[in-house]
Image (cartoon, rainbow, N blue to C red; front, side, top):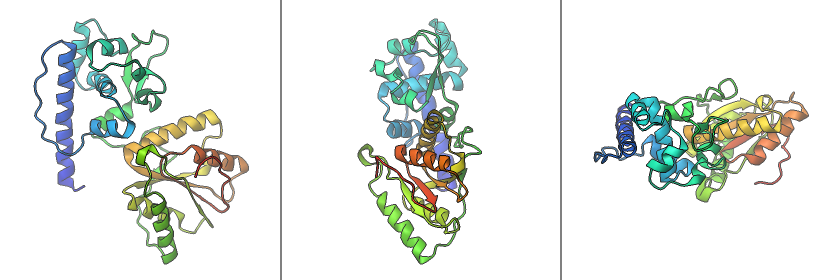
Length: 289
């Protein structure tokens, strides 16, 4: 994406976002929405979220409802005028078309992918809803790595030359991913087995680039050891992989102990995005390709 196109996309994405918020505000106030003027052919941030996470129209509007109070004070005033101090599911059920209860279920995409938060302790329909900060910035067209991942994963920026053998390995790995993501299938997890200095990161970067992905790097020793912590980290990374269109390489070092190997194998078993493990000996992974 060239700089001019990127700047145009950011401004037009913001314009479309304000149109969407105006439409929702009109629904809340029971007014006739003003017709919008669509000037952006490329998908906007909300369009991309809908596609990547399978949001329904109601879930899409519920997410925008939560974003509205963060972007526009007038939106908050509109809510207060109808006796709603903050966005809640009960309001969405009454005001937004296509409402369905599963939108607020823990297994639904909005909560499963932690796009919105429900304040605990209140009745579910009246509990205040809040959009997750990473998603809020994404809607605004401001990319950044989730702060909870900072210090654990780092973007790989270098472009190292590959040997013939490394190039062939990268080509084969990219080929394994040729059907990845189609029909909701997970990406096959991959292992690059060899010495620590065998150039696994460069190979992974080349394979990811062939699939239009960036690459992030993390140490295997930084994987959470407790199953619940690892599941939370994995969900957070899978969301980040989708938002940032990035693969991940996990570097297993020779000095890593058996607990790190077990954590890496468990991470591999449940990974759905492009994840590569670089290790001297193959991991024992069951239950997936």
